[in-house]
Length: 108
Length: 120
Image (tube, rainbow over all chains, first blue to last red; front, top):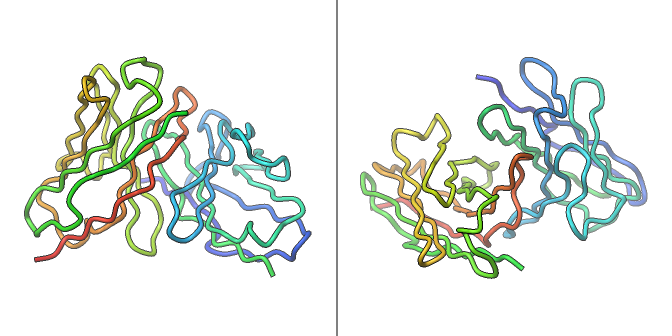
């Protein structure tokens, strides 16, 4: 069974840029997997950031962007802020919906 | 705008059936164009998609849970429901319902989630 992989943790300095990735244990991610990204803070429901690789959900600031980098989907946060400190999950569609394990982002 | 709210027992005994309902407001399930999904999150862990239903009643389930899951819809009440049979402690999780937007396969909005604990 193909697993969706994400970095378990990442850190970024305030004002810095960070790129989180979403890959496959076997194969490459393409736009046909419809990658989407969600942000979750403790005790809250996930918030949709990006869908269909690079489309921002309503109300999401443009410092969040999605792309395909090499063989992975990527979420880039430009000008990181303290309240970006969250868990980030990607989702891929492979005939079934599969979540990545999530990345815990620390801003410090 | 569309809002979703989960409801159901917060405690279920092992081997019993977990039952949850998601009430949709601000829009009609019957309007079509969307699937309606259940997603869960084990304590301190990541998210797991359980399955979806269309207003017509057609369903698709996560293969890993398929044998125990039933999702149904009640368009008259603008609700859809989850049943998970033969639960164990491993089914303890926060359960979310979400609108599942196709064909791009993303979720928005989400319900606030409800914690279901499996314990005797």
